Every structure is written in C-alpha cells, then in structure tokens.
Length: 479
DNA sequence: ATGTAC
Image (cartoon, rainbow, N blue to C red; front, side, top):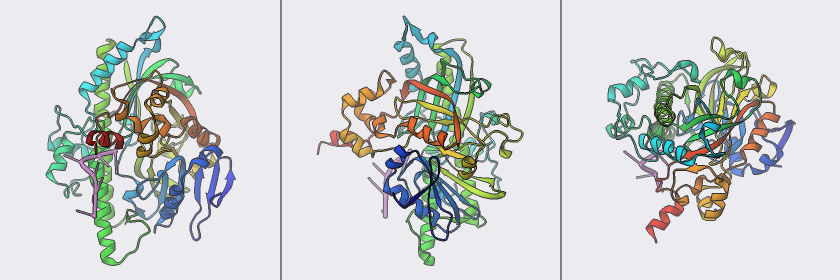
C-alpha cells in the first residue's frame, strides 16, 4: 500500500531515490487513515535540498508545505514551512493538590463550581481573534521577551530555556507597527482553532514516574494549548514570501511554493533562526501569562489550593540537536520532542533520570496524555520525537457540514464547554479528529514512548467567537 | 494556525 515497506512494529518506510527513506509511525488502523496529501508532502520535504531525514508521526495530516505531524532533520538548512506558521505552539500543564472529590457534591461533579472557574478564566483570557484589553506589554517589555531577557518562568519547567538573542541581530524590524502593537496586546491570549484551556482530572496512572512528577490519580490539573498568535504567522509569512521572491529572481526551482529554505550559515538563515527563537520565547511567555491567570482563578474558587507547573513543551519549532553523533536542525511541526531517560540533552536538568514530560492534547471532550520517551532504536530513529495530539481526520468545512448537534453533544458527553452554540465549535468536535487512543497505541507499541498518565477533561474553553467556521459564516451571511 | 487570500 502506497509503496510502504514495514521495517518494524508500527514502523514503515517509503524508499526515495538518492535520499534516506521516509519513516512512518502508525498502527494498522491509523495507517489506513493517512491521507494521500501526507505522502505527497512528505516526499516534497525529503526532496528539499539539504533535508537529510523525514519522520511522519501517526497524527499526520496535510498542512502548509510540510505535513502537520512531521520531523525534518537537516545539517545545513532551516525551513520556515517545516516549523509551521504557529511558531512555538505548545502545551503547558498546571498541577493542583485538589482531588476530584473536592469538586463533587452528592457524588456528582459540581457543575456550578466548574462553571464559575471557567467564567473567571474567560474574564481574564481573551479568545479567538481578541487580544488583551488590559495588562498590555510595553514595546520595550515585548522586545525583552523576544530577546529572552524577560520571562516569568522557572527555566526547569520549560523544554527550552529562553533563547538569548544578542542586540547585534535585528529581530522583527521588517514587521509593521500595527503587528508589533498587536503582539504587545497578545501576551496571555488563547487564539483559535485547536487551542484550548481545559480543567482535567487524572484518570489513569501508568508508571511510578507519575509520582516523581507530582501526578496522582483523581488529581485536578489544568492544561493550556496555545502558540505565538499573529506574530508567528507574520514571521513565517515574511520569510516564505521573501525567500520565494529571491528564488524566483535567481531562477531556483522548488517543489512547493511554500517549501522555502535557507542555508543555516547564511545571513537570511541566521536572521530567520533569531526571529523563530524570539517567537518561541514569545509563545512560551504567552502560555506562562495564561497559566498565571488560570492559577489565580483556581485560587479564587478553591482558596488555599497549592499549585505548581509540570512542564511547557512546544510542538512547532526547530532545535539544533545532536543525533547519531552529528548536529542537526531538527524541525518538529506537529511533533513533540520526547527525550528518554539519561539523554545527553537532559544532562544537568531535573528530568535527567526520568526523561522530560511530553504533553499531548486530545481533541474536544477526549483524553489528553502525559508521556515520556523510551530509550530505544525507534526513539533514536525519530530524533526522539512523537506526535502532538490526535490529528484531524476531516476538514473543518466537512465537519461543519456533516456533524449534527446531536452527534456533537454525544461526542462531548458531560464535559462542560464555554460555547453556547455548538456551531461555533463544531469544527473542533472529536469526530473530526483521529482516535487519540489509537495514536498513543501507535507510538507506544512502536517503542518510542510510554504513557505516564491519562487525563480526562471536565471543562473545556475554546474559541467560540470564530467567524471562520464555514457553517457559522454562511448562516450569518444568509446568501 | 492567522484581523484568512494576489
């Protein structure tokens, strides 16, 4: 099927002339769900000059140049399209000392209490296209965030410490004043699409690593999924557009109009890397500020509660890392780093003996997972990477068209949501996504990572202000 | 993903 060759359990390759084979990680059920567009794009990525290796994760779906769910490693080039438009998009998990029983009245979850918590969060955190109307950063604070001089975090809970960008390298100087102003108001805003804030309960514990990390059964936790908002998009767009113009001028051909790349040692490559790192700093700070507001609201509803942060991990970035004894720019787009115990990159960190937490969001109303990398051949082959979530199985448009209110409500179950109208979030219904349990099975059985804990949502906050959900717009317009 | 897109 599709010219794939099985090389191990849940491991497949496609041979490409003159290049390393493309690796696919999937169980049989998930393999059947991988779209033709993913195979086509994966070939374009591996055939991009300078790209050494490509790994496709089981949640992969068709994206912009490169599939979402892709690891692309290169010794010589950096590619904005292989990082993605939402630079630094990722996950953060807040731990509490609350137990699900603290939320129960007469054996049932006290919905009014959860609703009060969600309302408090909604009051403090703008959704969708909205930005902050208060607590705006000054331009100098914003640039301190970009340059890694300002962060509200303990660096140990971050996948990467703030990147320090020297004053000698210009960042964001090509962006308009309006874009910068918008960014100043966006620190602590959720955005739209698959971004969410969830109140969750730890449903299953799979290993004693959980206890070391402060996770226990029935514990209440809160998860934030967001990125660099408009800023990351502007950087990606600028570099793809200007590089394409340059390629056209010089007569350099390309396989995909968004498949742009720069030599890592060229001024352009260095400039993009600096701006990508600035956007990573910005995205992590965005989640840090949101987490602060989530924690303040948990404290309001549950005075005296104790809270801490487990980890913050990105699934859209490019990092310079050593693999197989050589240094690669590892682009992870819709893929998450999963370093196993005693990995050299964890030397000196608190995660050295266990591996670091990998936070994988489920779709609306379904489980999320905390994972950890396993020291294995498969983990090494994937550049110590796994998936980033469930992955779409249906376009937003199609989801809006075919999913009924009844199906949507059944899929959501008794999980509380902020949206009052199912139409404003129907494109995010779990029926439009792959089965997260099958995705997890794919990477676990392939030996890449193991489950630490399974989390179940109680309440979900998502953008319900979307003008973009096709059915919503059509209905409003009434053509 | 994104005040959508040449």
